[in-house]
Length: 330
Image 1 (cartoon, one colour):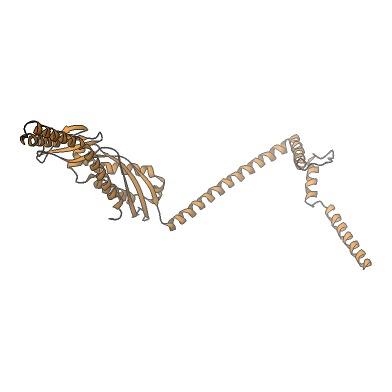
Image 2 (cartoon, rainbow, N blue to C red; image 1 turned 90 degrees about the vertical axis):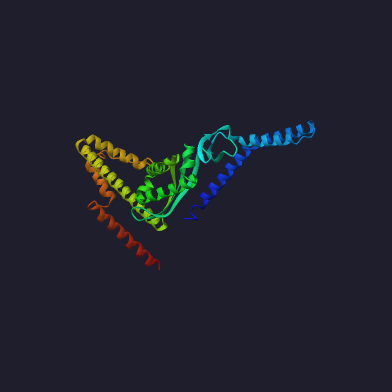
């Protein structure tokens, strides 16, 4: 767990350093004021007979005035405590504090933050270990609560998001997790928002980036998906064959009832048989008769009685003559 949140801790540390750097820039005005008072004290010292009271007085006044001047950026709010008790929220812009009595404890950044969090090897509802990582978008809407109700709201938000993610994974099956990410995002946002509302923090959105499952389970799911696709393909093919058979049946009924339609179809088949290769076809006058068309089909498949036997006799006769000629030549 310590190594798991190390990147987030580094981000929080960098964010804190960046905020401190900005606040140091805001103190530049105070240092310039102190320098001006100090210079004024030296001028009074040299122009009024070298009396030490002037530089000392101007230095003290400059220190008090420069210590009371504070500047907060547009996106910052300063939590001011007076004698250890909450006094006010200051900023943005210029504000004053009484030295020694007032103290700025924390500067709250109210811009949008992004926090990366993950859950490793967490069991789903159907006992499948998964690795899930997500991104949280949140912001501080009440700087007073964020400063007074929780010690470190950055770490608190990270831990709350991680525990919420583990709870959601344990209550969800793997199939629902893979197909219903939007629903999980909404549930996570609602749970985290309820936990952080007391800290003055609101969650804008949560987005699950990736769900990693074991390699063995990936192979099983791939084969299952392939089998499902094959089943659907076979079902579609069977439905198509059924429709084709019904269409053939309807066509046969139409041809049986209408002799002209059958003759037109016969002529169309003849045209389709010669239109690609070309050639000359001699068609007898009774080609379109049903009896003649049947005879052509039987001839094509060598099933006409008498014709098939004569053809076989001619083949045997030719073979015998060829053998006799070879023997004479030898």
